[in-house]
Amino acid sequence: MSKIAIIWRDKFYSYDKLNTKVNKLKSTLPKSEVVVLLGGFSFLNIAIFLALYENKNVIVPINSQNFDEIALKSNEANADKIISVKDDKFNIKSVKSTKSNPLTKSLINAQKSGLIIFSSGTLSKPKAILHDLENLRENLAQKRQNNLRILLFLLSDHIGGINTLLSGLASASTLVITDDFGTKNICDLIQKHKINVLPTTPSFLNLLLLSKDYEKQDFSSLRLITYGTEKMSKSLLNRLKTAFKKVKFIQTFGTSESGIMSISQGENTLFSLNENEYKIVNDELYLKSKTAFLGYLNTQNENSDGWFKTGDLARKVGDKIEILGRNKELINVGGNKLIASEIEELILELTQIKDVVVYPLKNEILGQVVACDLVCDLSLEEAKMLIRNFLKERVLSYKIPVKFNIVKQIKITDRFKKDRKFS
Image (tube, rainbow, N blue to C red; front, side, top):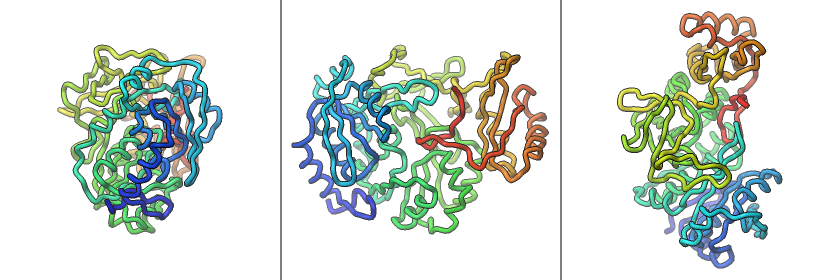
C-alpha cells in the first residue's frame, strides 16, 4: 500500500515500506522471548515492535534513558533481551533473568505475543502489567479505514500510546511522530502536517491554552482532540471549547490493566460503559473488560472473579459514570476526607486562576491539612482572599486550603499528568 503510514522527522514512510521493513527484521530479531524495547516511537521502533509481535515475543517498551530504571524494569519483567533503538540503528543485548514468571511462561508456551506495561509508580513501586497483545490487537482489527492524520502524542510505554499506535495502523491512518512535546512544536506539527486527531491529556491541553502558541498557527485541519489518563475539569473543558470552536472533544477511559474501554458520547467529563463491564462498590470503580490484563508479574494479583479494582473513586450520573479522583489521593484532615480534584475543580471556576494543584501537608494535630499551588497574575494575599471567600460558601471549612503558593507552572510528570505531590 502506497499510503503513508508514518511521518517521522519530516520523512514519509508508506505502509509498503513499513511491511517490508517488518518482514526483513523478523529474521534477525528474537523469537518467543521476553524482549525490552528501549526508546520512544520512531519508524524503526514501530517496525521492531511489529516484528517482535509477529515473532511471538512478550514486548516490554521502556521510554527512558535512566540506566537504573531500565535495569529495574528489565529485571521485574524477567527479560531475555534488550533492544536499544537510536535513529536508524538498533542493538540487541542478551541479559540473564534472575527469575521466571508462570504468567509470562504460559503465554510464550502458547505461542502468543504479549505486552508488559509498567504503571507510573507515582505513589508506589511500578507494577509490571502483562497483557495478551494479540487480544489487544484483535480488539482493534475491525477499525474502519480512514484518511486521518493522528499525532502519536502518548508515549510508547503507555497503554494510551500503544492503543493509538495499534488503532491508527488498523484504520490505515497516518501516524505523525515527535520527540519534542513542547507546546510550540506540537502546534507547528499540527499546521505543517495537517493533523486531524490529537490524543493527549488535560494537563497538556491546559499548558497549550496558557502558552497561546496555538494562536500563531493554522489549526483548520484539526477535527478531534481526545483526552484521558487523568480527570478533566469542567472549567478547563469549557475554556478549550471556546478556544477551539471547530474541534470536537472526546473523553477516552481505560487503565493500564483494562486497556482502553470507552469513548465518551458528547463533549463532557462523563463516559459510558456496558452494565456488565463495571460496578461501583463503596464509591470505588471495578472493571471487567475484554482487553483485561493477565496479571501483575511483581506484586499480588487482587482480581476477584475477573473484576479489577481500579482505585478510582466514581459515581453514577444518570446512565453515565464520573471519575471523582484516586482513592490514594484522598486528603485526611483530622478524620474528615476530601478529594483533591474536587477542590481544584471549584478553584478553577475562578477566571483569575489559570491552573491549580491541591495536595496534603503534614500537620501534627490534624494529620494533614490542605495546600495548593496556583498559577495566576494575582499577589499571594489577593489569591488567598479570593479563594477562601469563594470556597467558604461552597464547602466545609476543613476542605479550604490553609497554605497557598504562587508558581509559574504546575509541574507535570513525564506522562503529561499533573504531579499531585502525594507520597
